[in-house]
Image (cartoon, rainbow, N blue to C red):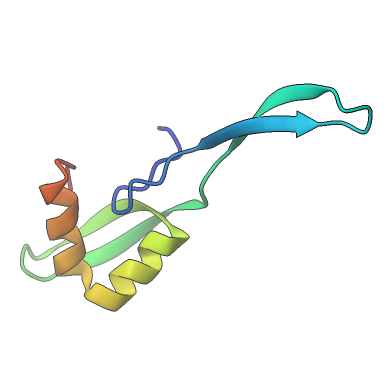
Length: 78
């Protein structure tokens, strides 16, 4: 699975490594994606999400129920 946040939609960015001699080669900037398990009381089960650290802070702020609703509104599967 790619480095992709289910809540915020954060995806890898692309750029260049630039050496001391200024040669450029391609590189990827991956978001800090973690697998996190949350208890979803409305469904009586745990859900495992792939979230960036910003996504984890968002869940802490708005709650897991609202976060799952946002993921499903974006067309994501939970």
